[in-house]
Length: 340
Ligand code: SAM
Image 1 (spheres, rainbow, N blue to C red):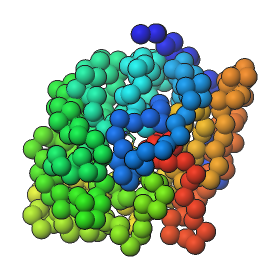
Image 2: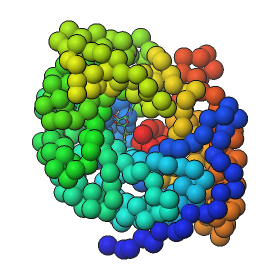
Image 3: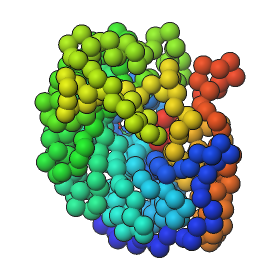
């Protein structure tokens, strides 16, 4: 393994505040566009054009850009992808991020396939929290949704994450009508039994072309009425800028979250920025534009210049994603290439 040296955070040029007064505190850092699964709502079965290795940021480049963003006010960094655990240097990257000053909160979103092997090393390197995607606990339906027979590995990964003390362990589920929507209650029972928090994410128009329709969407309110058949749900206040609205399950302490990104957008409170695996800064999952940081980085730009580019990108952040508006246009890249 190669060591990744943390840089000292750059002096703040200006806070990362956009034209609507929202301050960016949360960075989604994509390590790769590649994935070990082919979830039907995220990637086509075949024919994806992957980024070339030379296009991907190296570990030292990732840590440097993250360090500059942390110096500008980013407080939380979540590693994602693609599947972040397919990167051989993921533990080194976590260690590099954990050595930043100030130290950001470090989280990971993963499909869990490789987590049984990596949960311990990641926790030792400084990872604090993990979200694991799990759309069903039925092996056949898992294979149907993800196009891979890896449920056993994922369940072992969830146990390993809990054992490694990566708390809270959250489970992310996307429900697809007629495929796994009948699994909502079983998923909740599974999560509660393991002390994990389940979060349902409304399917967004980001997957394979033609794979999304508003009419077929399993909405947040539908999810709540499915869960409400077997459980008493009590809304929790103080959501702040978090994407998930949360409910106590049967009086608690277990809770369940729902991310209603389509039917109840929370853009007005958005604190997120995204850095793609090829070094493009995005201010919204659905943004039509990106700010190229990789080219100036590799051309020798200093931290102050890179910070200026980041600040300018954030100033131009759009008010909202606009799903449902006539002029809405899904991003040219799939979710795997943007970083979920
Ligand atoms: N590979 C990792 C994983 O599976 O968690 C990280 C990347 S994945 C893109 C991050 C999250 O985005 C997953 O929980 C996945 O279910 C969710 N996701 C992907 N495509 C989506 C879509 N079209 N709508 C809603 N959520 C989606």
